[in-house]
Image 1 (cartoon, rainbow, N blue to C red):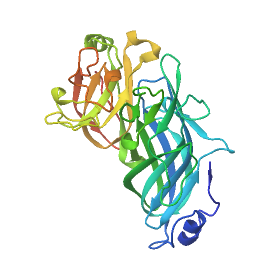
Image 2: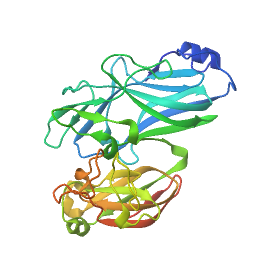
Image 3: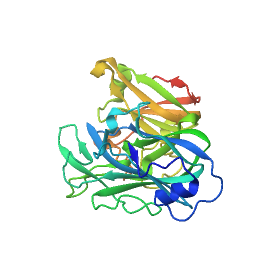
Image 4: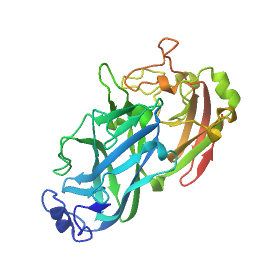
Amino acid sequence: MKTNNTLLALTLTTLLTACGGGGEGGGSSAEGTFNFAVSDNPADAKVVNIAFKQIVLKNDDGSISFDVAEDGALKNVDLLTVQGQAKEWLVSGQSIPVGEYQMCIYIKKSEVADIESSYVQTMNDNIAGLTTNSNGSCGGAGAEEADTGRLFINKKFTIAAGTNNFVAEFDLLKILQGPKGNKAYWTLKPTGINLINLSDVGSISGTISPQTSIDCGQDFGHAVYLYPADTTLDNMSDFTEQTVDDPLVAPIASARANAINDDSTQGYEFEFGFVVAGTYNLGYTCTASNDDPAETNVETTDDETFFIYAAAEAVEVTSEQTTTQNF
């Protein structure tokens, strides 16, 4: 990983000028160390490869750009290899001014199958292109090439004095949209990318027993969904871009349930790697593949319906600890 310049530890004004930021810096010249990684809650795919190009932080003073390419090559990460608490660092040990920022993540995109770009490999081993619906600069910085896609995380976050470890968690069940109509490519949307400060989070892990998965009755994708506390089983909804009407409650995140030791007869296991400390309810489903994030799927036909089969209530998450919850 390299940055756009080698002067990141100098003064705020020099930092922003060298990085192409707009205007002179203001406020405190204190700096914090920025580390940034990516992780994933995967969708129903075999490979979701993201070809990362650049990370840009921006605020009112300008922008700071980090080139995450290695020796001129793109930083390729298969998000399905960084499930649960696993993560892949894109930026490490970079000194930047303290303050509030927003983030843009730039990737190489393609509407045609290209393993040199971002792509999806489905369960039947077909390769398809992966693109985004956004491009352009981020506070005056950012990759401008035609094959560059932008994922803009508009929620502000704070870089404090000291070490700041952030993870962008891609909830693929929410943001990865399969081919529509006559299109052959997949689309990645920024709406389900959660930027998480690792100092504030814990994790949840557990198993689904073989009998529970059998009793669920279908095999369209085993997954566990995370909901706000007090969400009842009957009120647990799916991911959707449409308005969720009361009393239904939309999920916060999801985690794929993987067969234990690659053998479903031993049950399934799941993990939420980065959950903000608090109380939650969980819902298990065997129909996650029917959860189209662009639609509401809880009241559709029998062969396409989505439902939560079992719930776990009052799951407590504590910072820097793992909570166990089994179904």
